Image (cartoon, rainbow, N blue to C red; front, side, top):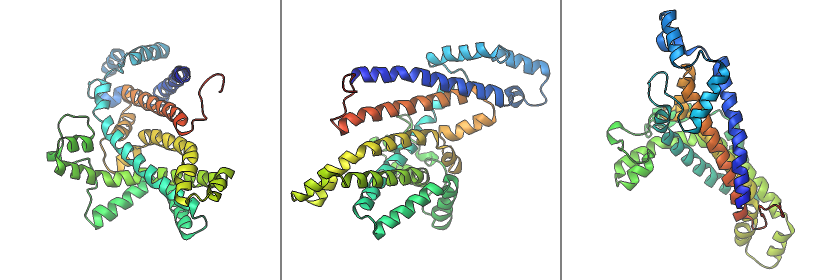
Length: 338
C-alpha cells in the first residue's frame, strides 16, 4: 500500500506539469494583452511597455514558463495584475466558499443518489424505478444555469422563502475561522448566522448537485442490478437471510466500488465546475472569480487556480483508489498481487 501510494504521488508530477504547460500556453497565446486592459486603452505605448517589462511579459515565453514553475514549486504564484495582492491570498479568501458549496452538493448528491439507485434496483420496473429514471434524465439534461434561474424564480421571486444571492447577511458574517460559514457559525454557537448561511446555501447546492445526483443514481442502479444477479446473492437469500440484510450487507458493499469512483470524480468536477452556479447566485467563490480574471487577462490568478484545482482533483482520485482496499479486502496494492 505504501509503495503504491508513493508511486501514485510521483505520477502526479507529469500530470501537473502538463496541466501547468497547457494553461500557461493558452493564457499567453489566446488571451488578450493584459496591458491595455489594466492601464486602459488610452495609456501611452511607453507606459504599456514599461508595465510589460515590470511583469516579465516581454521575456521569451520559455523563460516565463520556467519562472512560473520555479515560483509555483515554492507556493508563490505572483501578484494579481489588478489588486497587486499575492495570488494565493486572493484565492484563499475565496476558496473556502467553493469548497463549502462543493461539499454540500456532493453530500446531497451522494446520499440521495445512492438511495434512489438502490431503491430503483430493488424495485426494478416499478413506478419508483421509472420516477428515478425520469429524474436522472432531467438532472443530466437540464443546464445548471437554467436550473438556477428556475430555483430563483420559484423560491425567491414567487415564494420569497430563500435568498437569491450571496453567502450570508453582512451583519451576520463570521470573523476569522476556517472560512466555511456553516462550520464557523455552528462551532461558535451563533445559530442565527448558521441558519442564515444554510438558507443561502440551499439553492446553489440544489443547482450544483442535480447533475451529480443523476449520474450517481444511474451508476448505483446499474451496479446494484449487476450485483443482485450474482450467485452469492441468490445463495444468501436461499439461506433465509432477510432482503434488507442482503441488500445492505451483501449487495451494496460489493456495488460500492464503481459508485465510489463516480462520487470521487464528481466531487473533483464540482470544485472546478462551480463556475455557472457561482455566477448565477453571485456566490463569492473561485469559480466566479476565475471568470472575472479570464476576462481581465489576469494570468497569474488563472494559472494558479487551474493548477490548484488540478492538484485537488488528482489527489481525490488517489484517495478514491486507496478507499477501494477498505471497501473490498480482496484488493491488494502490491507488485506480487497487482
